[in-house]
Image (cartoon, rainbow, N blue to C red; front, side):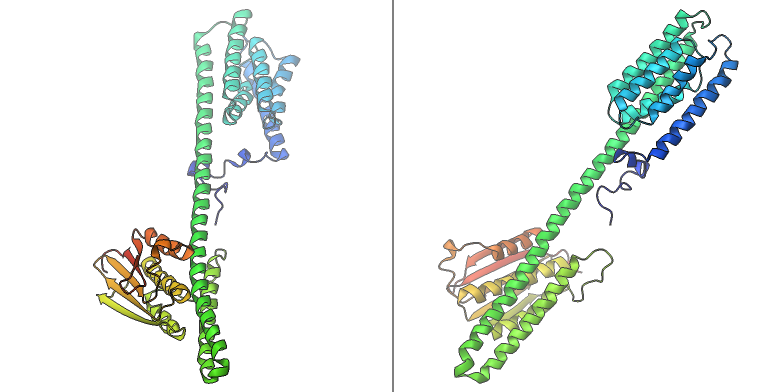
Length: 397
């Protein structure tokens, strides 16, 4: 999977074109570009001079001025402002001297675009203005360069087109950077949500199974001397609970694998697994009954997982804190909702007002809210605690 700041990510027109925004181009690439620009400007200007007899002939100074832009390109990325100033000054002097028009504008165009894209817009526009002023000065100062509104207007139009193209490119790069930043923030948010989900799963799995193991271990120790024949069932319950806990933990850990790793080897917890919770709770001395009303049907995986974990966490709290002997789990299938109720016969209802809301209750409420439902913790008529969850499931399939 690509990282949010992957250089191939972003608008199609920017893919693969924004690498120089993050690192300098290789030296060989800069030198090759400078060499090509130098050839074009020198060779093209010599050819252009033959077609412009009214312009000043090329001399040593003209050659020097034509080479300024190619040389400046080699340090353009490191010193954009100084480089643009040097290119603009050389081009201005070239035009002010009345030398022939031609490829001299190639280096200027590269400098303008690079400077605007890197954010030094004022420098680019001032450089373009200086070049236009130098051309006008050259036409007025030398008899060989007759004034021409058409030529002056053409140079102005060309300059504006180059600057407009540079502004468009700068806008595209800013949009690409915005897209990358948005992708990075989305990725971080999704990673945070995934960490929270995995933390909830780990809490529910570990708390439930460790609670059952703790209770069974206490029973085994208590009966070791008095009723040794009852120790074996308790140890078997510990073995089964620990085995299932390890299986679920392995499945959760595999979620953290990189792309291409094998899929989890056990299915996602669902309501079909409630019978195992009922059976294991019986080994821990808690008699749990399950009642189903309405028309049972397959539900979305998220709804089944949330319902399963809510029941699991509620039973865990009963085993650990309620001192109850009985608990009742009711699943009521509605047209577009699933109502889950867990009620125990303990003594927690009287102290409900002082109940400290820990990770278990918070986790159950977050699971319900994530589906657009709600969860309530109430006092049960028999003195215990009643947990009610209302989970949207969509229309029946």
